[in-house]
Structures are given as structure tokens and as C-alpha cells.
Image 1 (spheres, rainbow, N blue to C red):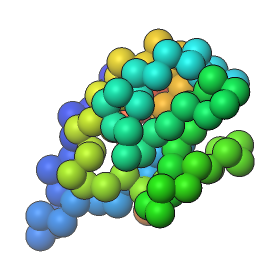
Image 2 (cartoon, rainbow, N blue to C red):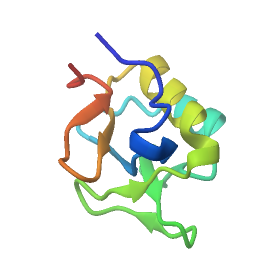
Image 3 (cartoon, rainbow, N blue to C red):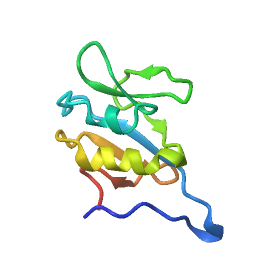
Image 4 (cartoon, rainbow, N blue to C red):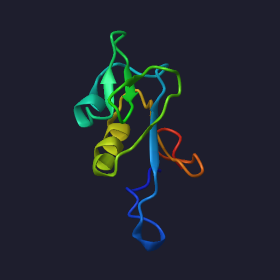
Length: 104
């Protein structure tokens, strides 16, 4: 069961999230790039990767990037709509997946 977007914890501060893609499961459909081109990009190999805040493609396996709060809904929708179930969004604090195939 996937949770709704966090509205914030104590004091209303949103919890820091990061996202990564499992390229072994990526189908290259590019849905994530359509939702959040600031965060995702298709590489020459046809697979999706996350980008750093400096817009650098992060091709190392398991590379993570912060989820900018204004793009949270787009990143979450990417994870929900991904046909490969390969997009993982987790809390930075405890690395618990909150959206994606391993979310509780």
C-alpha cells in the first residue's frame, strides 16, 4: 500500500526525501522524464537515471538525488505510473521507502 504525500511532521516541516532508479528493472518508457524532467533523464542506453541538483546525470548503480519539494507530486506520480516498478522514493533520515515497489 502506497502512502499519500507527506504533509510534514512536527512544526510542519516536510521530511527530506531522495529518489533512485533500479536500472535492472527500467523498461525505458520515459514516463518518469515526462512527469519530472528536472529529476529524471533517459541516457544513451535507453534507461532512466536520476540527475543531481546540478543537472548532472548520475549513472552509478543505486545513485540517489534529493526530491525537491515543489516536484514531490511529480516524482511520486512517476513512481506510481512506472511500468517497470523501478523508481524508489525514500526518507533520507532512515532510508525507509515511502513510494515505489518496496513501500509499505
